[in-house]
Length: 120
Image (tube, rainbow, N blue to C red):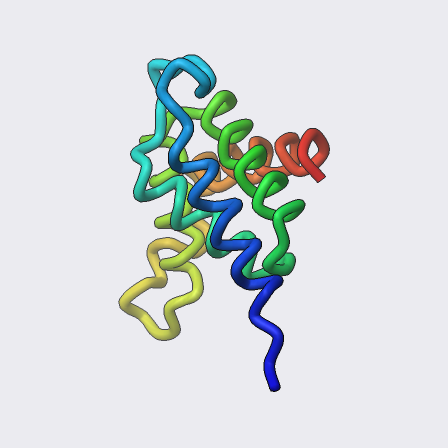
């Protein structure tokens, strides 16, 4: 028989974080990321690092740190370039090696590395 207690604890931790009143949350910066994008980042991060309350905290910390370091527009630009570089064929070739686009990726990677040091 499968033990669902760890999964239930994980879901309870997510509900607890999402249910915090606005006064208990950190101050909103001018570069605040939309909630949907923060949740998507945390879920993908946890998929890569494990589904535990500790990784929920770490992954949430990481996107908060990234959001404090770069604007949401810079985040989207870097993520878009990285995704497009993975597309095979000529259609995405302009995303591979373009200097201006590399700057967007460098900015994102720098913020990601700094956030990794702080949170993990």
